[in-house]
Length: 192
Length: 192
DNA sequence: TTCTTAAGACGAGCAACATTGGTTTTAAGA
DNA sequence: TCTTAAAACCAATGTTGCTCGTCTTAAGAA
Image (cartoon, rainbow over all chains, first blue to last red; front, top):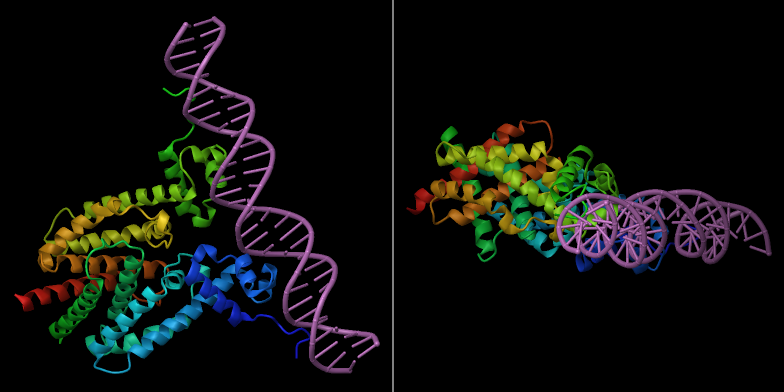
């Protein structure tokens, strides 16, 4: 096909970039270093990505796909409350296992490195579904948004060590998610 | 006192840096540009800050102080639930009015630019106090953490436009905060 | 008033970085 | 064997954070 078999491709670049991120941190992910790890020169990366931000966006969308997979795998069985708790745990587990890529993908202020919104739909859908079962269709959307905020907020604060340390985050997390759900269920009973 | 009256000082530098941040974005806050806006040269800034990260940390701690003032001003009157709702609204209002500085201070992944934990104690205390009144002392700490997560998470997702647009965020926010509080109150009743 | 002094500002320059343009290398297909 | 075009490279540029040594200036001592 091609008159010059490529030594790399987008997938390989993204994979290596994510490895560098988790193993050595964001600041080590320079184009020079990434290229060197791939056995090529930095300018060659521009064959595959318009610029560094586009590369980062691709990395973040890959992170999004992994997170989606983790969420979906956690929502296989049980009632809606159980599924939500399991998804919430999987969400936090994912962020704790891949803190650098998670932060880069979901806590970055830069607009042009964020995953495209529709690339994250698979993340929202299973949670939305279970939430609708728990709190009812009427409150489904605001309840979902609060849940996403709660998960992302807790994980962000935990990763950036803004909680005072010393207590059991696992139990706190479960309790917080449960409390939030209870609050919406209470509303449901009140309104119906 | 000094044999050479300074043309700038830490406060003036921090103030100008925050102006640049909100008016022109993070990427415009380079040492060269900041210095030029102050009428000095970039190397002179190193008289006042060890490096750029220390400058950013000072900027973020100033942002923290402003946020604390806004929170405290919002918690002056009313019962605990009212105070919490008002503080939550003030928190979001602050972040919406100063999105760049807020994101830099509280959504940044860089550890060494984050405000020192004890610099944010004034932020936590009033919320903690009101939370204790609402959910009881026993659950006070986990409930507080969940509340902080909820506020920060909601604001972060809203600022980074990760909610699908089109609905009333004001009402959603209030409803979400109220639901979370209700959930803990429910637990209190159940346990007592 | 003159002199000493040290803080404050500057100029020059470095290394790391992303990015670009032009050139060379390579292997597939004619 | 020759043509071709993709892939990789080399050289170079502009920007950035940062350092070093030097000069400038006004306060306080003489």
